[in-house]
Length: 153
Image 1: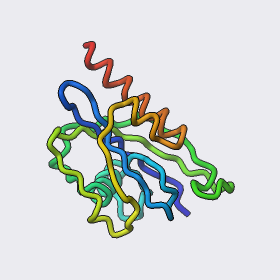
Image 2: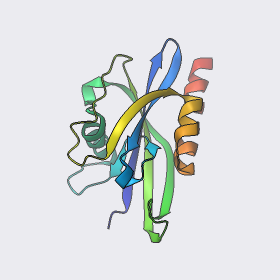
Image 3: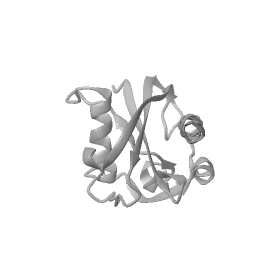
């Protein structure tokens, strides 16, 4: 059973404002919006390497497309199944932020797991309203606060 997951909040600056990448899961997998995420696999050397793998699988985002990585955005625990709500062994989710160039072209169609039906780049407020899970919202808020502090510096 998986005990560690990775959440990758991808963002870009567009006309001076930050936009965030959200993926919409197919109906069979809940039909909700979320950032790219997935589990740590035995072949992953580190949590960051797992994040790079997930980004490549889910958005066709390669390391060379990333401007910077913000580690330790958030850490939270999940103890209910995302579809059934039934109790599960605790999973710890680690959240990273990834900035990409504004012209990065997302592709969700290379994912062999066929998890997502569409994607959108959205401003913070819309991202917050689209996200289903409170943990995802809190992580996005934490990243947004970090980015806004940078703008003031």
